[in-house]
Structures are given as structure tokens and as C-alpha cells.
Image 1 (cartoon, rainbow, N blue to C red):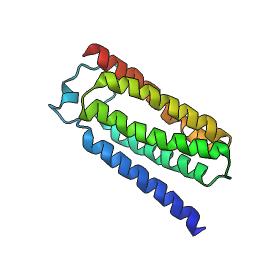
Image 2: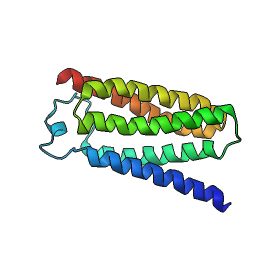
Image 3: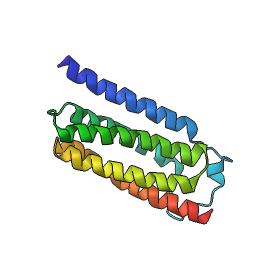
Length: 156
């Protein structure tokens, strides 16, 4: 039982580290590059992002952990591969968009992220449906962020 909870802690810590790295490269402060961009009318208020991303990273960690704890199978291995990919791609998007200030490249990259989330959901569904369902709200959010990213690229 301790091993089970220990592995959950590893997933939570790993996702917390990735979230912290992403937080370090994003700069939403007044006067920053992001602050000066023209944004679409549906721009969410800045205070939304911290709590939302906290929830997403917790769900991503729990979802990955649930698949990790599932019965060994080809689907499980694929789901874990896509899980690792989506965590990495989420960080890469943040770097492309905020640190390197390339919204066009970030837009292309977020499409790949969107695919990885979908591939994870499909593979995880065969291992544990709960893990797949946990990432559906995040998938919807990434769809919104992709549309938001497209609009920022277009407007700027």
C-alpha cells in the first residue's frame, strides 16, 4: 500500500516540478511581452490561470498515476508514453509562447499537444476509464488555449 501512495507522490512531485518550470518562463506581469500583446475579446482574466493550471497539473498527475498502477499491457505502455509526451509538450508550449515569444511556433506545437492528449485518453480508456475521463476537461482547455493562441498570433 505504501508503494502505491509513494508512486502517486512521485507523479505529483514530477508534475509540480514541470509546473514550476513553466511558471518561471511565463511572465504575465504588467509591462511584459505578453501584457503588451493584443488579445481577443474572450481573454480570461489573469487571476484565472494560476488556479486552473494547478487543477490541470493535479489531474494530469493523478491520471498518469492511475495508468501507472494499471495492469501491464500494450495500452498501458502507450498511455504512459503519451502521458510523458503531453507533460513535456505542455512545458515546450509554455517556453515557445512565453520565453521565446513565438506564438506561431507555439500554435503548431499546441496542435501536437492536443493530439498527445487525445492519444492518451484513447489508450488510457483501455486501462482505466477514470484516468481517461480525468483529462477530458484539460483537453477542452487546451482546445480553448489553441484557439486563443491562434487569435493572439493573428492579432499580433
